[in-house]
Image 1 (cartoon, helix red, strand yellow):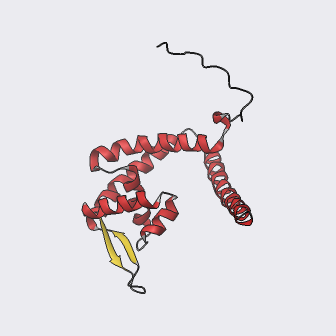
Image 2 (tube, one colour):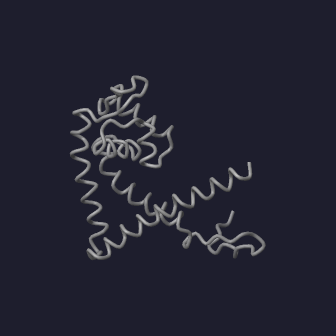
Image 3 (cartoon, rainbow, N blue to C red):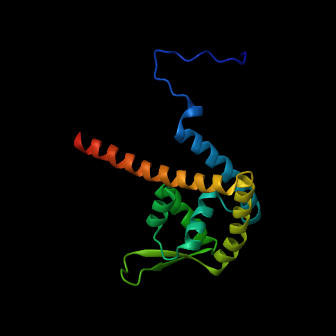
Length: 170
């Protein structure tokens, strides 16, 4: 079977989606590349996956969250978060306790062993971020984060509009 070097031009009878100009695709690819680059270091040193590290990163700054709250803050799948939480508890890096105000609700926090890892991985992640952003001026970094905040706001608004539209048609 011969490998094609030049794929056929897209069929103009179908919808056209130019991925290089499609925001979700571009953000996803960039996020995956950056996350993978950072993950190589903490995966080798600490046996952590990306999801586990994200759970630890959130809980390193916000103790006493439920697994659902972690999933919401990271926009990760609840099942993936639950698996990561179970893995981190089994590794002794995470503690699950009951909420003082609602005994039915469990909350999570890093254990001492979890903080020992967090305190080593967080500087690695920040160092890598500095390498990525090092070619930008302070003004460009400020603009980037303002634009990301604005995109976040616009995405949440678009999500509400789509949900309202779906609800109206049910």
